[in-house]
Image (cartoon, rainbow, N blue to C red):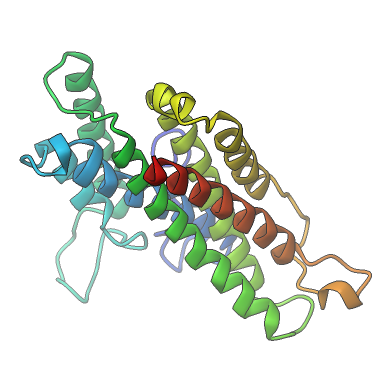
Length: 246
């Protein structure tokens, strides 16, 4: 969606009017981070028999393409003086590879393991990524800086994009692993985790404020976002813990 229906803005050069509008680029970078992390788990766990068979060719291609830097436009002078494929073109190719994998799964020609341990590993890795972002929130708000700065909104919108993509990915993954989740008695906590991610992605402040928290009558949007992220992490960790215990 972010490269077809919407324009990829994270690699806008400095002479574009949107180059200094960094909220959408950070949002898109956050989404791409979640998607690339999930695709790695598809490649290493869900798309392989017992996690040890040959790597699926489409997943391998998609994973590699999604590692491409988000800010590369037609030129990257660190690599070459010649024009190159921009980031959004690489991501469109990754999307085609993922659709090819999905088609082959539907035809029974590719592996899609719905094992409980594969779900636990995938959820743990995604929770770990969210945890790293929650830690960045903690570090920034603990600095007790000015209520409006040029970093808070970058963190906020990156996290917002990451939470939204994680919500969509895990929502659909839950449908694939519905039998496993139900058998483990995890339907309620799974839905709670999804709701926490959804709430983390739905804040729409006019201006991202970084107040001093409990001692201020003004909002701290990073605090609230961090709360939902941490709640989602706890709920996802609970899913993995219960699966491993059984």
